[in-house]
Image (cartoon, rainbow, N blue to C red; front, side, top):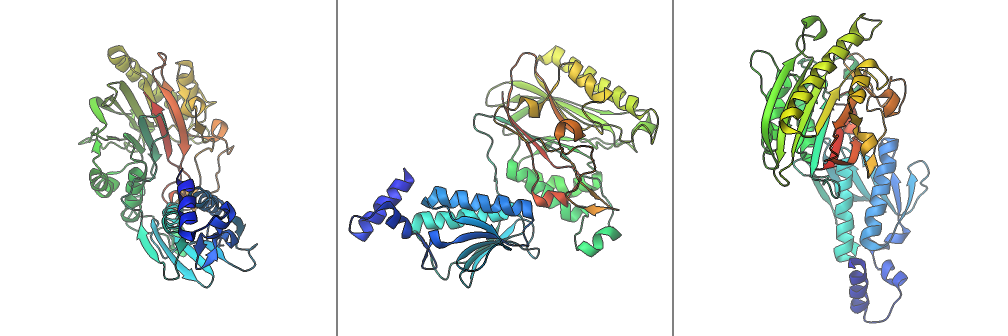
Length: 433
């Protein structure tokens, strides 16, 4: 409808009858037809995100103008008019700029999300005015913006992430040559923007230190979030946060796994909470955990330690369901694969992976990659399979025997900036209660 209106306005402004192709030719960047431009992702853009960013720009332009420019990499591009996408390390992760360089409109971003915002701005300018003038420049940031609306038909969103407890005030030697700073003062604002970009109803985290809390929590409080349980003497390393505008907390419990030899200085625990969804009145529960981490060969008894910790969670869920008769979501870093005894206990008790339940979209990546003080960071995964079913140690499950929930989307957020934050990609569940 909007495209037809644009064409009609062009016809009227030109004062005659012209074809759709002629009307499309009136859409111009720097005086040249948009159709003559190529979308070029430069070498500075990570290959995977470069492809994604270029495809996004193409789709956005096509939706706005009816024109879909060709895409090529920097190596393939010869010369001519171009919309260039460049990852600029001098920009903060969510910053962007748009400018002209020769015959190219250059979109630079600190990351993919910023490039997306800049691309939308260009498309909207072309849609509204039909041209990008010579002096067109823009710069800004997506910090503080809600970028990703919940899936169509869904009314509950859960965001889960193990955020890597690196509480040191020094930069690891392996990181110094990269120029990347992994300290909490740098990472906390990016985790906060992750929350803001998705605006989940529930946030579940693991490896959440008091050090990170002091830097992260005030930032998401600005967006309205409340921590479900802030422990005193025993620090809660596996917290739940919620948005009181959308859900009401009815119950919360924190359980530190014992004995201490299976708890890593108090970092292994679970938090459970029950909520009432304000829009629908539906009640649901969320449990999040970090299970014991070592392999059986490194420490005999580790598998059974994880299994025992799972049984405590299963018992807690039974108690909750006895009172509330509600569906139960379980999220967290289980440090084991679906085929293992601890996970089979969940499945034999009726829990199902959210990625298997998703009716609209499911990301099947294993959700893990290299990121640590000794290794630096990369997309490389050391898990036995790149697929979630065989290679994931982070799990998002649902117990719903009454079938009160439809999982719409299960996503594994793999934007490049997350690679520098933690070795676990964030998980997003969009569901309908």
